[in-house]
Structures are given as C-alpha cells and as structure tokens.
Image (cartoon, rainbow, N blue to C red; front, side, top):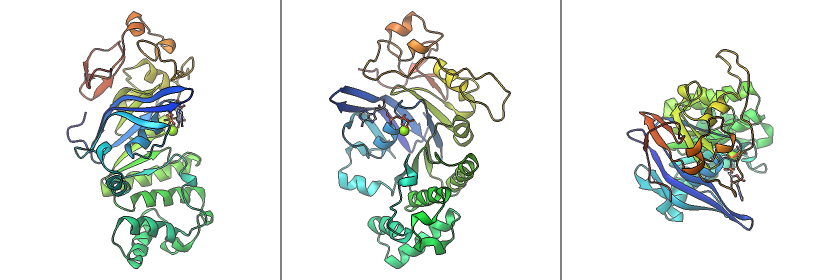
Length: 329
Ligand SMILES: Nc1ncnc2c1ncn2[C@@H]1O[C@H](COP(=O)(O)OP(=O)(O)OP(=O)(O)O)[C@@H](O)[C@H]1O
Ligand SMILES: [Mg+2]
C-alpha cells in the first residue's frame, strides 16, 4: 500500500482451534506500515486486533495458530524464522506494549533488574553499561534516573506505563506495537503519554501499530487507520479521511458512535445489532445483518479488500476497485 514498507502483512490468517469449533479471528488480513508511520487498527471488541498484534510478534499461543499468509519485515518473511532467530528479532527489531501493560512489570524486581535483564539478554553490554543505558531510557520517558533502584509499586499508573514504553524502546526497535497502551489511565495522562510516544517516534523514527478503542485519539495520533470487522480488515484510509469520508457502512457507524472533540456536534447513533459470532460466518459480506445499505450481492458474494482509489481501500460491495491480494479460498 505504501511504496517502501517496513512491514507488509499479506493474507495473514490466524485460527483459534478449540473444542467448540475453529474460529478464524484474523482472515486474510493485508496491510503495510512504512518506516516512521503510525498505523491505527480499530474495530469493536473481539474483531481480532490483538490477535493480529500478537501474531506479528509471533507471541500468539495455542489455541491460536497462524494458518496462512506472510509477515514481511524489510522483505523477509518472519513467519519462516527459527525460534532462536525470532527471539533475537523480538524487542530488537519489533517490540510491543501489551494491552495489560499496567501488569507487565515484575512487582518483585527493581527497575534496574528488569531493564538490565532485557538489555543484557539481547546485547553485549556489561552490567555497568546496561545500568547507564537504563538511566538514559528513564530520562527519555521523563523519569528521574535515580529511580532505577525503585520497585514498580513506587510509581503511579502513568509512570508505570511510561516505564513499559521505555523497556519497549530499550533496543531501539524499528517498530513498536501498542495494544491499548493507555487504557486504564485518565484522559489527560493518556494524551500526555501519547504525545511523548509521538515525540519519541519523531526522534528515533520507529513505526507504530497503534490499537485503541478511542477513535478520536487514534485519528489524532495515526497517519493511516485500518478498520477490522469480525476478523477481516474492511477499510484502510488516511486517518483524516476515515471518519469524515468513510468507504464502508461499518466505518460510518463507528464514526457516528463517537463524539467528535473538535468537529461539529452530531447525534450519536451507533451501530444496531451485535458483532458476528465467528462460528457462524454468513455467505457474502460479514456486516450484512447490521448494514442499512445491504443489497443482494452482499448476501451472495464474498468481500475482499480492494483499492477504491489511491490510498483508499474497502471491501464493501458498494465500491468498485481492484482486489489487492489473492482471492480468498
Ligand atoms: N484463547 C482463545 N480461544 C478462542 N477464541 C479466542 C481466544 N482468544 C481470542 N479469541 C477470539 O478471537 C477473536 C478476536 O479476539 P481479539 O482478542 O483479537 O480481539 P480484539 O479486537 O483485540 O478485542 P478487544 O478490543 O476486546 O481487545 C474474538 O472473537 C475472541 O473470542
Ligand atoms: Mg485486544
């Protein structure tokens, strides 16, 4: 989608194989992220955002299995990496701030132990050099280096979040996945932390995959946004256009479920109905039961993400365009 991507996700499929049935939580997902780009991934709870995030780091665990596709990082498919190579790749090339980042720090170890553990496991730094680097990382996230010997409980929630971000930055990765990095923090602290992350991104040039339920924050901090629905990526657009000029009725519905901070006031309408049960995927479009613009083709013909115009992708039958990937099988 962009010309020189850092990462290209091609037809990625991830299945949860359970006794209740096999659920495809990520179905032929395709998108690219350019160096230095912030790509937001949005959609209702359960649509597959974290499944995509964990799979990109290959941190998914059974019953989740990657069943198809490629994750090309600088042109190499990391799904083919050995476990040892992947361990080296993780944190060094791509790191992640988890959805439950508040609990990501080990409560019984000082920060010094935790930073040195990451730094010394992945680099040839001596303990003394690792401590110095850790102090530098604390300064980057505006925490006084003298606090390196403290335990996580001695910090506020917002500070702990910044500590987790500092650990994600420790090895200068080229990409950071942030899955709800500021959930559970108040809105002022959320914005402060995101501004900090954005400034760091400008300074160090890493790319970000940014997942949040807060669409206004996402629009503010992302260059482009991908919208997921029931395991599929159904629209990709520049962030400034995705809510003001959506190319999918679901995106339109998402936009009308959120108050705008800066735009004109409008009635919040939301999206009628519930997300799909992934064990009962209908023929045709997955959104058909909730769509006000549903027509015959939506009930019979499967949807694929298509380029509608340069930079704009949608899988909705209302729009014409070229499929960007292989047809689904
Ligand atoms: N361990 C599991 N076993 C079976 N199904 C799972 C498992 N984990 C997740 N799923 C299913 O995969 C789908 C995608 O889940 P995922 O956590 O990726 O969603 P999400 O978009 O990140 O949601 P949220 O916004 O709530 O974090 C959901 O329908 C969920 O029920
Ligand atoms: Mg999630």
